[in-house]
Image 1: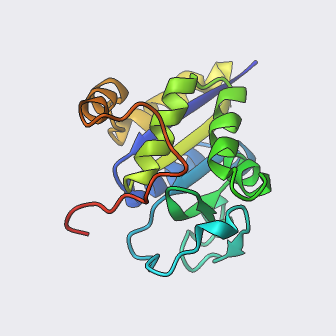
Image 2: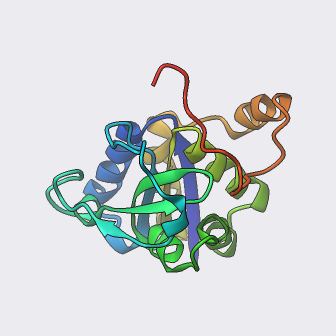
Length: 183
């Protein structure tokens, strides 16, 4: 059997390092995904109406090999442009325009991620974070979790409580893209 292990991180750099660590441990590129907000990408002229259309940005943004070499850009309604690679990104990019967030949430839930957690992961990307997801055989699931947890992912319970105090209930693709204070 295969388990999907998903973690959100507050920044792209941490998520990218987790992807590198997973690859260095022998997890196949095809089983690892990254979707994240890169703060060095100018999204001031982003057009969410082109959601689902990928534009390759290549190895210049990611690593020289592996998953990050295939990094591309997709636009997610309510989020804007994100750097994305892997099976989760492929599902999102293949979704119909205007339904990419549903594609990401749907891809996560169909792979075994709790629906509430999938909404929280999408919201964390909306607010500037990044999500890493790996499909690992049961025999290597604990190893994948250890690698991902070393990088100190967000605490889903604490983050959900913080968002809910603000009135958040679930990811809303029609919401205005979130601008992090100080960025």
